[in-house]
Image (cartoon, rainbow, N blue to C red; front, side, top):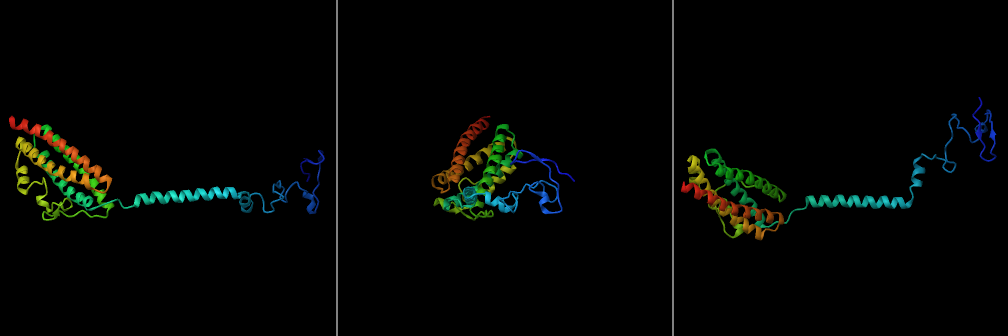
Length: 253
């Protein structure tokens, strides 16, 4: 079978080759299977081999690749370390998180009673704000406790609180906490009576909360807790003033 005429790159003329029974019937033109032989003469293993590609990947490229791998491993280690590093903490941080969580739990309980039995729309809005904001802050404080490996203590009215403020006392006597009798009165009240009792209890509750939050803002080790405590103290102080204005209106009616 005749092969296609191919240009002779050395003489510039066309040559016809007739394959023979010998190996020199494929003199630089076709491979044994009739396909063009594209192998690099300098690369006996073939230009597509792993050996050829590795030799083409010179020392400079290997150096760049090595530096890139070092950077990626270092960056991954940094971010893992940042995410898993323990936050700064102290007795103030941990005591504040536990005691303010119990404090917030009771505030939510008081707000729920107002939403169930109160009648004044402004006061009910106040209760809804307490319910939403203090539940959100409870979630934040729970996260900060988990970062420290702290399990929230079960509610116990005799649990020692506020030792981190050098003011140790049982939970039932913690600043601003309503007594069981006061909570029972709130549950029994209806309409405007419930509105007024909610405002009175929550104003006192906030005063205790502001006292605790201010101390934590001044003494906590973790800046995140400092910021949280500052926000609590600021917001609750403003709410006390708002509650007083509405309480004065209700009592004058």
